[in-house]
Image 1 (cartoon, rainbow, N blue to C red):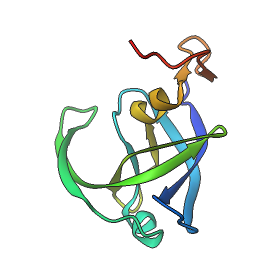
Image 2 (image 1 turned 90 degrees about the vertical axis):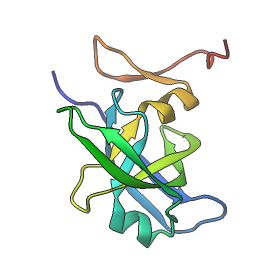
Image 3 (image 1 turned 135 degrees about the vertical axis):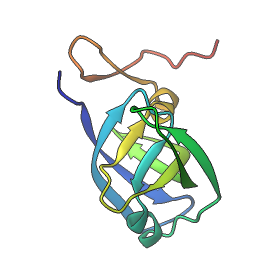
Image 4 (image 1 turned 180 degrees about the horizontal axis):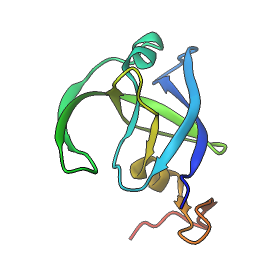
Length: 120
């Protein structure tokens, strides 16, 4: 089964001009988004804290995080973005998907917009 990818744009919150645009892996097993730390620093995203995360192989690692606007598929949300290794593949986590009302169709591995965002 292949991976689902989507072009996304990350910006510092507010009226930021600089942006990081790339092809992000859609990872429904990841809560938060991740991008290369050098790119996040370049566009002015500030570190706001550090958290422990469990990787798919069971290993626990700590990452710095900041808050950013994440835009994809014509929608925008705000959320936590992890300062990943400089050579990491960017990840679009499930929180960004859910907050924009977009889900991954498990049969086709394509993204589709829900008719309404659940509020229950």
